[in-house]
Amino acid sequence: MKYILFALIIGFLPLKPLSAVELLKNGDFETGNSMGWTYWETYPWDGDGFPVERPTHVAIVIPGDIGVPSPPIISGSFSLAQEVVSHGTARGGLYQEVKVMKNVPYILTGYTAFYGDDTGDQAIIGILDGAWNAAQALVDTNKNCLGGNIVSSWIDVSITILPTKDVITVFTETRQDFPHGYVAGWYDNLSLKPLSESTRHPQSQ
Image (cartoon, rainbow, N blue to C red; front, side, top):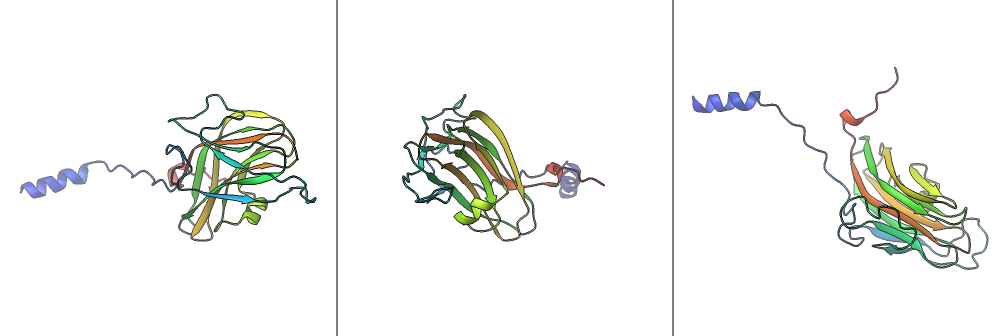
């Protein structure tokens, strides 16, 4: 009798939905480094297609010191900065490939900030439908870009994707497209999760 009563009580308890599992490793960079991410770089690179006269590199810096946003972190103790600290053209960042289910929507959220001093400077965060490909990332449209001669505060980013493959790639990118100046792309609290029914935007009828 007590087992029947216990089963009846459990049956009437409200069931709480399980929170979506976080799919990114070290998306908040609270390890104090870029563990879980892979560094990439196109070198030498010039976005205008001209011969590269002065190529340089993108540095991964935690904590960063160029164009530090206010506050310098969204939460915790660390944020990621991708910096170009010498004159020249550069393109690079981090990426993370994630196993997913085809035709199931996913959402990438987080924060990004930017420091640039010329029109060719950019900080990017995006998702590729498939494995990592630097050439594809260049033309990918599923991304958020900050650029130009600006200093931005933290911006809330939200990007969704409906994968056609069983792997997608979250990537960050910082580029300097002119042979002068300094650039910094900042990132914090990056998160990738399945897009639940409750968070989808209602479609127009």
